[in-house]
Length: 238
Image (cartoon, rainbow, N blue to C red):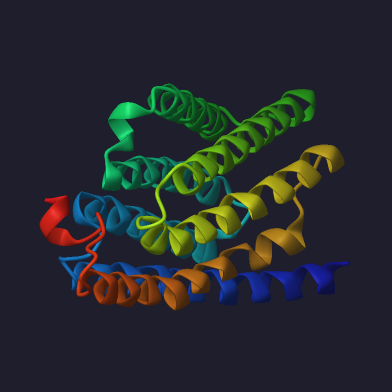
C-alpha cells in the first residue's frame, strides 16, 4: 500500500508540474496575441495563470493538500469569470437573464468552500466533524461542476453558427475540465475519501489547453480574414 501511494505521489508531482507549465505556456501565448478573443482575452489569461498556480501548488504541496484545494476554488472562480466574458463575445451576457444569477450562485458556493477550508487550517478538526467538512466541500464541488457544465451548454448551444467557430474548442475544454471534476468528486463523495489516482492525473488535462488554444486562435484569424467576418474579430469586439 505504501509503495503504491509513493508511486502515485511521483506520478502526481510530474503530472501537476507539467500541467502548470502547460497552463502558463498557453497564458503566454494568448498574452502575445492581443487581437484574440476581444474583451474575454484578459479573463482567459487570468484563469490560465491561476490554473498554473493551482497546478504548481499541487505539485509542491501535494495534489490532495488543503492548499491545493483552496487554489482549486480560486481556479474555478477565475474560470467562471472567463466563461462570463466569453458570453460577451456576441452580447449574450446582457440578454440571458439566468447567466448572472447562476454565476453568482456558483461563485457564492466557491466562497463557502474557501471559508470551510480556512476554518480547517486555523482550527484543525478530526473525527465526525472532519468527515462532515469533507462531504460538504465535496458536495459543493459537485454543484459547481454541474453548474459549470450548464453554463458551457448555454455558451455553445445558444450562439450562432459564426461564433461557434471560436467557441467550440474552449467549450470542449470547459466540458473536459468540469466533466472530469464532476466524476472525480461524485466518486469521492460516495466513497467518503479522496481518489488518489484520479487526483494524481487530474492536472494532465492542462495539456489540452496547450494543444487546442493555438488552434482556436489560428481558426479565428483565418475566419476574420475572410469576407464573412465573425463577432470574435478584434475590431468588432473592442
